Length: 225
Image (cartoon, rainbow, N blue to C red; front, side, top):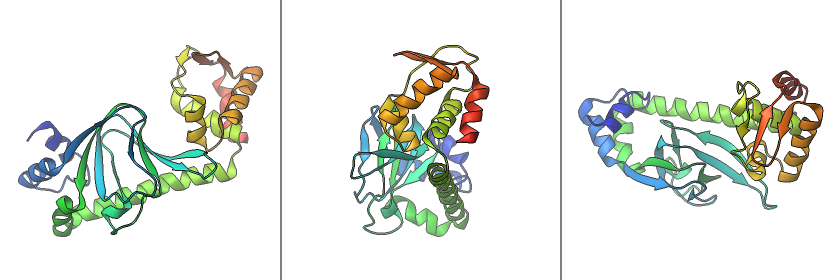
């Protein structure tokens, strides 16, 4: 088996397939490269595919009519995601899919995978479990938006991405807009919250980097708000 087939064999959805079936599934996928911030598909598109992230990250982005955006979930390396039309004809995408960084993905049409899913109950069951897990992740995002204020959500994001840096400077690898998309807010609210954190001594910040000066304080803010 090639490297891609071997990677698939380690994934719960594909692990029950015989070696010859794995090879067939691997060969039926098409490979696509996307640059950072490139759109893969748009909200409202009919996109009847399932994909595997071979390298990089893809975000599912929800946009409002007012121009605000929210990252509903992030698909990382060796994870699967899908368009709704993969399962139900002509169902539009409720989110856009965007490359968060340079990425390589493998894409299957429904026609390519349907014979294997119909034949292999274990494969279908594991795909259903993947869908349930993803629904739970998105539910957690909704709960976060409903029950936590912007400072708490932002403190949680900083801890998730940068905790453990031990007061060493870390590059500001997300713009204000990207931070806002992660927590369902606006760049203005994020900017105000960051400088409030700095005034409180939780972080030190400049144009290119910041330091988590007091992670204990950030934890307290995240839990309080």
